[in-house]
Image 1: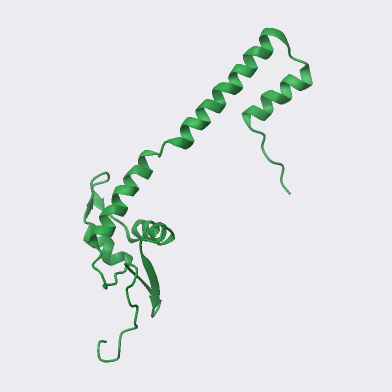
Image 2 (image 1 turned 30 degrees about the vertical axis):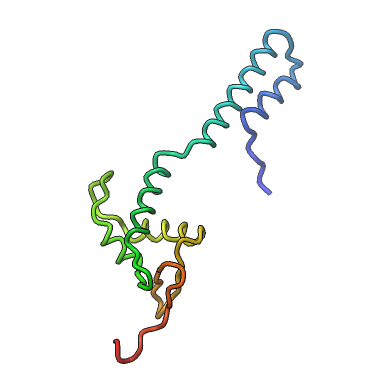
Length: 134
């Protein structure tokens, strides 16, 4: 098993313990630990810019769904149009990743038919196409 890399807090605590740091130096290092902990708390509470953007794309994806209809990631990527952040079209890979998140949240369901994955709203019937429809 590979050695786990020590965190900054673990390193500071090891320095305090190993060298017997005391007085003002110890107070300074403990203050640094507090600052690191505050920064870590702040980061985990606030979604990133990309996460916020992805939430708006997920909302747009859900708005495209019609009850009972099924779509591929490519269909939905084409229907989304242009990404305002990159000025390019959405890739099926990005849409697929967001659909996977929506599926985990229970907002959509999926099924594979003839090696293609289709997505729909909960309750959508995923029947394979009949010979007449091909």
